Length: 256
Image (tube, rainbow, N blue to C red):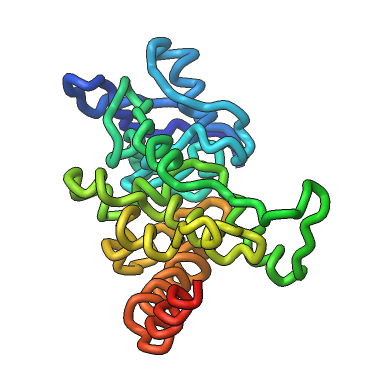
């Protein structure tokens, strides 16, 4: 198929405000939305601000909302749109705008620092860790995350309620807590850190109502809800309400 001219609406502005601007731009076979944004910079609007890096779907930098859906611009092919369709590109709605398509995603790095890291088991040195392959495979899925923060952006708890941000880590970092909690070698509990309790009390696990919107936008296909958040919720509930678990915790304390 030969090239054609597409109608784009691109959000322009900064923290003080802005709006959509119309552009007619050439599209060639095999191109992605990021190619078109670069063409706009090269031919019509050289001061258009956009964040990108690898253009291969692995750095997570070029996150934006395309026709209202959080996507990576470098992984959204122009061929998925009709030629006469108007394509709207806007910045991530859940985070403050810096300029044009660039947002301040510092919220996510703040939340990342609030999750205690992996605690190595005592007496086991580097290279001596041993795990069942099943456990390796289970956590390996979560390590595919490229931190594009599309899941954070689409989560309505963050997206629609700014007041929730101080108390809610969001799906990306609840997934991190879940990964550590199910890690067979994580020795956090021996040091008094209960990851299930902190997920509930400090990271806002209870805010999540498992709509699976985070899973739907993940470019890596991680089943965030089914494989991380729901199992973490089940373990947190067991810890809090199961009478046998409660009794075991009391007996354990007395024994120490």
